[in-house]
Image 1: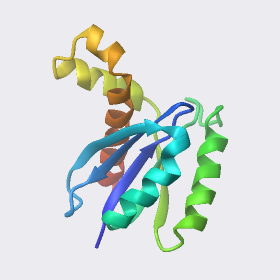
Image 2 (image 1 turned 180 degrees about the horizontal axis):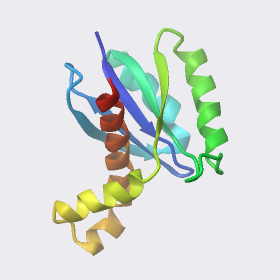
Image 3 (image 1 turned 180 degrees about the vertical axis):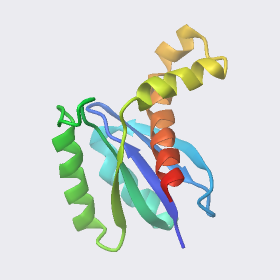
Image 4 (image 1 turned 90 degrees about the vertical axis):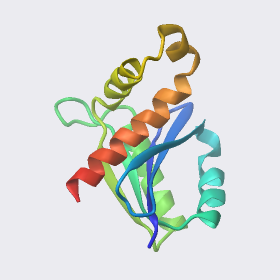
Length: 137
């Protein structure tokens, strides 16, 4: 039995979130440079059992593909080849960045801190994607 890992893919930075071992809670994990994603995942999965990878799936409000949709599909294909025994799922990520920002404000994060710590937004977005996925189970 492994954890569920969520990925919020970005052009420069990628946010990651992971469940607890019982798969009840979604927790922000890390924000990493997108170019380091595959190496980071390899290292992480050598230490932790991962059962499912959830990719935030970006679309426009009308459901049409946007500029990131094909990148996520390419990542899905690559991860499927690298980790054939791990289930790869897509999860709608519309509004997650806005929700993450609202969460940070609610937690008392100052405007200056939110700008300086943009990486926090990415991993909180990944946690929201993961929590949405968990609610479907």
